[in-house]
Amino acid sequence: GAVVSQHPSRVICKSGTSVKIECRSLDFQATTMFWYRQFPKQSLMLMATSNEGSKATYEQGVEKDKFLINHASLTLSTLTVTSAHPEDSSFYICSARDGQRAGNEQFFGPGTRLTVL
Amino acid sequence: EDQVTQSPEALRLQEGESSSLNCSYTVSGLRGLFWYRQDPGKGPEFLFTLYSAGEEKEKERLKATLTKKESFLHITAPKPEDSATYLCAVQVKGAQKLVFGQGTRLTINP
Image (tube, rainbow over all chains, first blue to last red; front, side):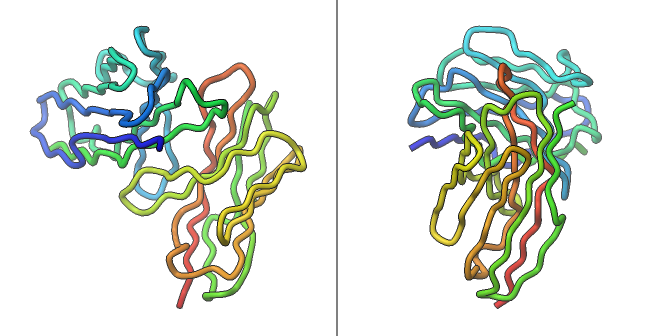
């Protein structure tokens, strides 16, 4: 149980284009989803928290117009990197919390490696 | 400010050599402490949740313990497949997000 998938696993795009990453909870309803980015040999950096049906809450320093987050259903959240530039190249990971579990664990997806040329 | 500090940064052990990883935390109020394992190029895998001082959880060769200031992840007779980065995170009361430590890169040599 508590499986989270991400698509795509890898994406390469040209500078200036937009990229959409999907995060799905496969066997539970995710009332809250989180988006992180991770640089090589560093820990996870939280970008935003999204609750189903509500606007995402962005962490300080994260541009909400650049990183668009949509959590339209209890099993799907998307992150769109708009007008991507090489500095946006990173490993993006989503996580989800099961609203019906007593615990507060976050279950993570496998990550998406974004390379902007 | 809520902080999580993990030590050591990296640890190299021989197969079968038991050891412990440390996670020290300073938070306004602890809702839960979480341990994750992360393999290179993958998302973190959930291991344990601890909620109150004195609590312990075990899974195969891993055992997590919690005090009011720190948590330990004890690894008994590790195998090479236990090599990974181990991440500790805390959830503060009243907040949804996790605050992560920098992780400990564990390498088990055969």
